[in-house]
Length: 158
Image (cartoon, rainbow, N blue to C red; front, side, top):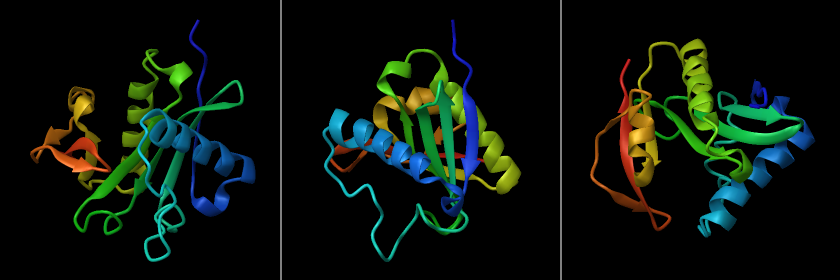
């Protein structure tokens, strides 16, 4: 039986302390611990992307557990000419159920509602190219290393 996911989109100042804790824990569990990628997940003082007033945090809860997360950045935050989706994370125990696709569909709908008719650029882990292609993204760069993990730039046009 597939659990129903409760989706919530919030700006930083709308997050509860528990939601902030949950999203930081999930990001650290996936990117730092699981992928052994030691990087400063919290953005620096000059570039506070999580706290930016236009950043949207998309959280997916099942049975009060955060199992899916990503953030959407307005044009000019990561890329001058594109909005961006990043920090895409699915809890290990929730993978393989199609939740990643559900998360992406929710994110693309949210992008259209909040940033209508704007192209989206992402920095995708190379092994996820086909996943993102299923959602309309096209690879626009060769592989590059980001935090020692192979990535490619991908764009979803309007």
